[in-house]
Length: 621
Image 1 (tube, rainbow, N blue to C red):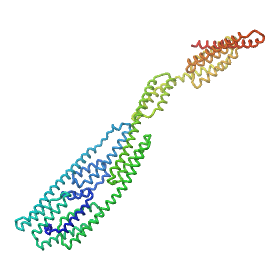
Image 2 (cartoon, rainbow, N blue to C red):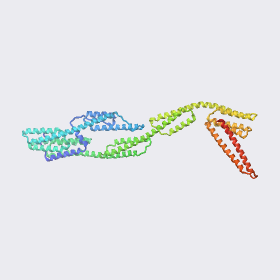
Image 3 (tube, one colour):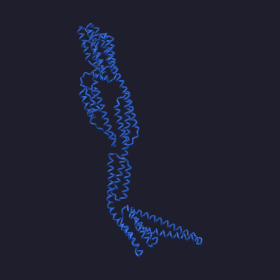
Image 4 (cartoon, rainbow, N blue to C red):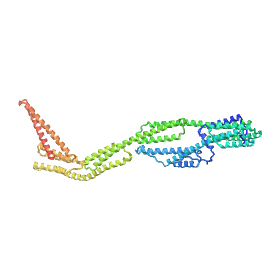
């Protein structure tokens, strides 16, 4: 209303205006509220913001929605909504990044080789950069505009100040004043720090102007009445703010009402105090709600801090646990990720504790994942050593797979298989391949061995049948008239037995023992001297060696034993003969001498038998 400044503002009115400004300062105690105030005073018209729940969107959908916001809406109007979208995107990106990184490390790869590619990351970075740039330009432009406005308003004050020196007619001077008032109200915002001084100067020189022109009483009363009507409407609007659910919306609207109150001129003196009390009461209600809101917010943040401290303790506890298997690390990692989700859902902590508690939680998480990384590095090192060891086993197996020394090679391959079982695991990337290589070499040998012995077994079955026929022949053996012929016949049977060859291993000892027993029975029937009989039996024993494994080794071992026994027997004979030499031929010693002579005879016979057995072996070698 153009005539609202016609009534001079007295000291009380100026005091009330200052009080109104103090109320405004209380409302603007939070930086966010001040920003809302500046945004809503911007003259640019914007469309109503859409309702977007970013928690339900994918990363791609969040990128699309944020792109629409910065291209279709006022950059300040979308600030809070845009920041929520960024937080939601970064939470999803971090989750995907950590999961991909965990899977990569679990394959045995080094963490420094990990590279996470997400097509939306470059887009979101560009959108965020555009948003930050536009917001910075907006505030920069806004501050520049405020400074320009401030200079313009101070210039208007100077022009009002000079009006009292104007030599034009009163009507022309008054019209100039009205034009200056209009210019003042059209200029817009100025820096908050200069606001009080600006208004004090403005009202001071306006009052001086009113005093100078001495506007008549009727015009003054009319102006006061119109100011009263405007301030009554402001009171009504302020009282209706209590019905708003959003305290931030109510605070923002109340600030606008205080700005309007300050712009309106004085009212009749008798209405001034009651009207201001009414407006102040409505203000106090909103201020109390605002105070209660921030008080409750602080209590809620304290509770959130307690929750976050417990989450820190849980993560720190996991950092101290000794985890010695892939299964345990996987299980605990899932618990850590669950705690991270709880952290995101736990709400904000008090501002003074926010950085400190987040740093504690972040450091605990980092320590856990560093421990996990170190564990897998050790596992990888061990797996690399195991891989090299198993590669050497494969090489040895591959060298043996063509060998036809079945017994020796079988023992060596079984030994390699035992070493394989003792060796630790290798990376999943190589485990199937290296096992297939080792098993392939072993299988190739054992398949050839099986094929070989399937043929040999048939031959052994034929040999067994021939030897069983010889056993029947011995069971029905009839001696010749001459003893020499009987011995030759038995030797011939013995030679045929040796020439037949191997029989199945499971029956070998049994059938050889049966043959030896039957042969010894026939030799026992003959009237042979002890040496001859024992030699024939020994010959049957040596012949049995020819049908087993390690034949040459067994025969050489038997020869060694005989040679040792011969030396012992010869030494014993020499000792006995020397003992006789010490005895006289008296009747008292004749019994002892006779005993010694018997022992010497037995010892010489033993040497004779042993040499005969030795001859049997030497004939074979």
